[in-house]
Length: 106
Image 1 (cartoon, rainbow, N blue to C red):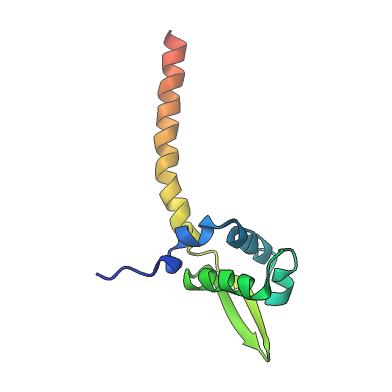
Image 2 (cartoon, rainbow, N blue to C red):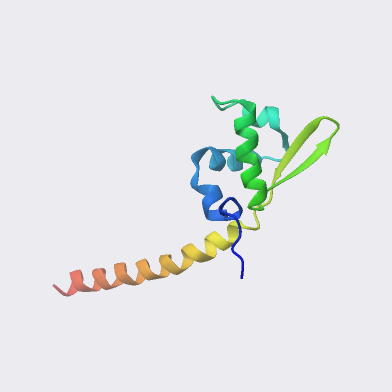
């Protein structure tokens, strides 16, 4: 079984704060790359590289209209992260409940 490239991993994609900020911006709807780049103190090619990683991970979809590129959020892959975190949430809830019971008894 072949392993996908690291950039296609949703966890790797969201590990970077710039990419998380781009995802936040895209929550309001489809936007052109120039508009997405405005809040950042980095070059347009750097933003494009971040968007490419998000596209490879399936978190963002791109469409071309003439010379412009428009990006939109695809939140579906984030469900995998939510499911993964849910396992740990249950673990910690059980630990906190046990601690609460111990503190009440002692």
